[in-house]
Image (tube, rainbow, N blue to C red; front, top):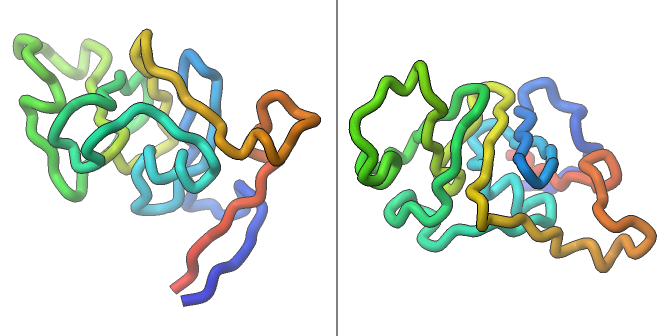
Length: 140
């Protein structure tokens, strides 16, 4: 396996992931979870088990579609909420397992935050944007 360094956004099969209210926009590679895409690009968000079993990372999917190739429990995904029409209301999302199928917009919880751990490498910028950071892509 070789590692190829590419500029973010140069592959048409990448999916844009926008996080609110922190106003972060990143690219997820095909088959990559939201949390893995964040981690690959130097960000850390709130999660615990990374397998969809605890619900700590639960967020709201405002736009777009995600899939759960590894599967998640409906009880963990929706918690104790009563059954609702998920087409008419915002949808629950587990970023630790959610794989974007389209560009997505996810709203984090009111106490969640995202930290850019590579910010120390870019002291002239308070918050680097996706275009400022190279993406490391694993090629088969």
